[in-house]
Image (cartoon, rainbow, N blue to C red):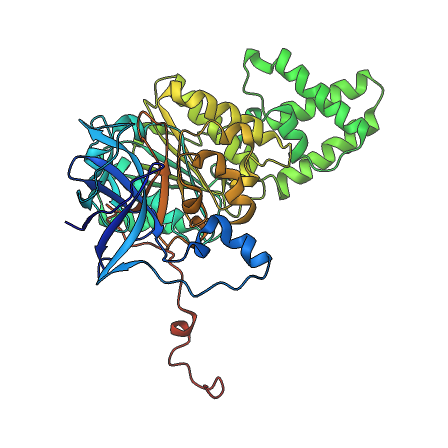
Length: 478
């Protein structure tokens, strides 16, 4: 027993009296002996001056406010909790309230989440039982968001290991220049040798066939063109689409050059065609080295983990969007029965403020993925910069410490959380997040810490003093 229900119980809130040495945090989950689920809001103060609803106004008016003292009963401390409902048979029913004097203990997630919650994803924070989700819950489009260094990458990789241990293919589009997914993949290969690991580079040796690009994407890759050159390139691409060479759709770069030349001759614009071909040949040789005539960029037959290393790619957003289409085609042809696609730095691929071609491909991919057995999982430090149509398709969110406009971008998903707890999100400890999802799968937001990982995190925040510890000749230390 942690404590007991105090008095009075009113307005869906109640006081809980606990021993002073017991640490409670805002967001902690408790349950009474009769099954009422409580969530800690904060300590109850002796003076009403420290009520968060009126404190800001009194500060603005420069009124004298006495020092805040938590309400104590001897050596006990009183906390204010909100009453979320009553747990029965894995469901939480609304209505009713605990009685004063009723004993309180840490909540067990098994009492809160219905269904076959089989897969361990973490443990309630700061204390409580193991948090497990069902396969249906983990098969929903999801997103992991948090400020830099809050633990979102650690969580994404932990979940990926869970999928891989259960033979679910995981495909990672790595966009961050620190390449922490590549390093994680190497460590996973040593820790779990039975899991196949594929590190894939898109380059001259493993190119994307040029016919895979849509006209607007090839226009973007072609760089700055004159209006006449743009018209000629679009006309050539449209002509290749309507009447491809050799009765096939897999046209090559030389087919494109020839078609540009033929159309330019018919329109008496040989100079424009020659200049366009010269520019395209130059860019294909020097910049667009990831484009080729044929190739198999993604072969799903190997299974396991696929990491597409796109961080230092000149057109990484465009390449990532094409890979999404290749995954979609593999699923439609039954070569890929299902899997998880982790999109790192998702705000670069589906930005809210730039109308780039990749955004439309990924938007369609996320919308279609559920029907193909694909689980899209977006990771970003800037949810406000993600295309809103894509963001609204995500059913589960793992929200780490966020602040400012990024917190405002996810606030509508936190409607089941007390306003005083939302204010605590920017201050969450590293590795702690809020899980929000459909009410039938997760009845209310839960604070938890990720567990179940078997590899060491490849890029934790380093202590800068330890980096230079023992260095000689760098001046006097203070």
